[in-house]
Length: 407
Image 1 (cartoon, rainbow, N blue to C red):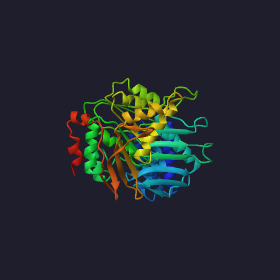
Image 2: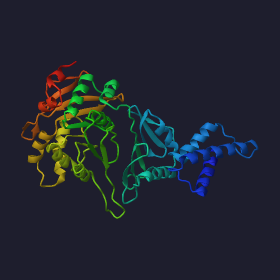
Image 3: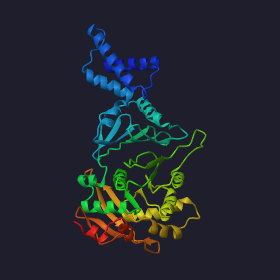
């Protein structure tokens, strides 16, 4: 057994004796770890103990094991890493700048289970045979997803999606090359004017980051209520209320789905509603809210702006057999004003590929779209379309023609 492991065992024994809580007594535990390391080094000088090759490294290893998440903590601390996932104890992957890498980290089955238990403890959520999936938020805001057998073949699958906040506004997206300046000016005006916006894209495309940057353009006097599966949205607004779903109890009761949150949000006097990700029947409640004059934004998994609109016409049908496309299609056409489609490119960069407007006209079950900005030759350029609700832009002090003619 190496010196760091001996020190870790001694620290854990002291934690049990002193009845310390790693979540609450962090300062005390940091002092305790340094004291045990110093004591170990003194004993090693007199023989009988293996000397520490690197005191600082050993101290950090013990701190990570006791106060953090063990071997995964260095990846959580690294700001260049966006996601961590465990396929099996010997295969731990990370994504750095959008590119996947296999790490040299080797875990044991027991380490994986222990780490998951510690990660879930602050959220109060659980995982067991009756509930083999779990979503939770870590103390640093990262999103945790775990799946266990018999849903998986034999291993525990762990995904940690970090919220690497490199962008906080539309100007930041321009600086990073995700968006052009003319497109950012238009989107900022659209948000300030109260248009309803859907941000579409694939997994890890940057939908939530883009949504946060769009929300930064919301006027400061508005009250925003956000709804999501687990807390991921981060808005720097004066009047913001955040809601997340709740899992059922051991008895199978007490679940609060996203659809319930959307309904409850409407009772909280919102000026604007933001839905973290639309996946199922909650899309119907969102459409009804947007159609009643409440501005809002949401994210959606889709491969293009057109597919996002098609999906918004399909998901509400999951709400029940009495919901038909005859109602949903014109409601989508009247409720959604803009779709921003963003994609993760092969080199790991994120790019907005198109911004389309929904003029509100339909032909059969097909909703007409107008291209405001499109990607040509790898660049986002002005399209031929114009947004609807020009009067909303005018009330907010914007001239759409001048806005879209700027270079």
